[in-house]
Length: 141
Length: 111
Image (tube, rainbow over the protein chains, first blue to last red):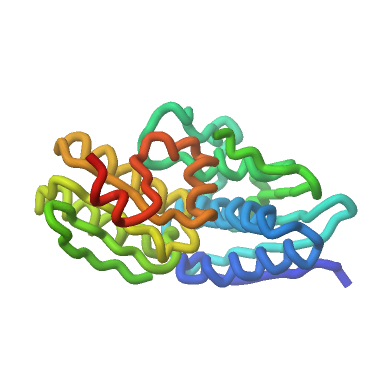
């Protein structure tokens, strides 16, 4: 049996809080401290909102799968959607000295997670996130 | 999430309770912009004491409020940030662009 927790749910923002709860508890279960659990949860949440907004263009009835798995040195999250894929070069976020709404989610994900890998595949997109134990998130104050 | 406004002297306070995420940030944005653009309030103070969680869409709503307030020559302030909310603003490097106070009293008394 695949040693992962799988969450399957519709792309409806109402479920964001449910997914956050599961991710935060999973991160605690595999040994992350409270602060890291908050960061990992935020990164997964931001990735999920990107799926809803950019892959599914705010259609709230499309399928999303999130797989949570403990790996030797940390925690892996795989998010699968069947919406519009994004080219790597389009995933640029925005300069942080440009104070305007939007474009923050991608920056947050990259700051928090140790590895991010986006794979636009035939009929689906996969986002692989990995957080290594002991890799602290810098808030850059 | 619950959101309400109240008047305190020449300041309008927006009390937000709950999580601000993609699901409900449009409501926060709507109230803030309504106060600034339509009611043309001179000082808008957002009370985040009851906010446990805020995501990038919530931060975007606050940034939009800040930008509109500058265009309207109004003051836009935040107070009562939880550690989680402060962390998100710090991570997005936006904590310094806002006027942030610890308590309602401090925000009300800010010159």
